[in-house]
Length: 391
Ligand code: NAD
Ligand code: MG
Image (cartoon, helix red, strand yellow):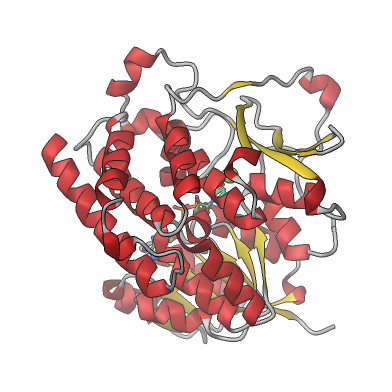
């Protein structure tokens, strides 16, 4: 059997390293084309050398000499910068993992789809900013987008063999993040360190903080709408502190199909890697009797205003997802830098959406990559201005 050609974008991150963990168990099955990372040059070079990648790319141009030095004699080519990322994504590959964090993952993911790859999508921001573009590129080039976000992988799996016309609703679960049990009055003073600890999942710093604010869940609700073409009223959220049920699909006959599994991203990554087959994966098998109980509670929009904003974005459609995501990224940077408080992140995003809703140049239902970039840029400028006013 010929080896599958695969690339991993964001290979040095949490999703990237979990993907490499699965690939490393079966090295003879894969031929690695490209691995990419940021400033963690040692890790990137070591993985690229071990897996015999064709090329390793760092997104930072100033890291190129370090990457070249680390790869000397390995036979792995080195490159750097955003253009090099897109070039690497254009190299023929059968399966590409999109696990860069933030809107920066969009262009490489689109380039991978344009060369006909199956795109395993962890980068939810791509779907939030440019869902229709992603799906159209997959269709045009005979590729496919497979969800890697655990909730969306769960929905995807629950829908296999089902008729979308019989789907009444989708319920996305949320752990509630670090502050789910904090009194509301304490939230304003929460620090980045406190927000960056997750009760159940080990993830990158940014998505962990986004879990505490539920901006991550907000992105996921929008991602659900884009991925499965649902109406916003069909998408619900429930807080489920144990993170064992990842999502549920409700059908017109009243049945609810739940996807249950351990909080280990290697399940969703492995599902996308092996699709359409199901193969053994090294994840824990749940002992339900030992777990005893699973609990659920309402997702309160006063505690988590990001959920209300997501609903507004889903209703507005068009470029509002790109605006929402960009404002969120800027607000998160400002929170990490201690320029604004935890609760001010939602204020900044709400105000950015408000100011840009009057921007006529963004008033367009048909989106392309240029318009998405423009919306992203305008939202970042607006959010910076708002932060300067409130900080
Ligand atoms: P991470 O911070 O651990 O890793 C991010 C990766 O992207 C690193 O390789 C980093 O070098 C690279 N990167 C960062 N900025 C970049 C830029 N501007 N250009 C190019 N590369 C850049 O993040 P993560 O937790 O692995 O998350 C990656 C993506 O997967 C995010 O979109 C996240 O929302 C999504 N996701 C993650 C998890 C999880 O369990 N970690 C679960 C579901 C979805
Ligand atoms: Mg998720």
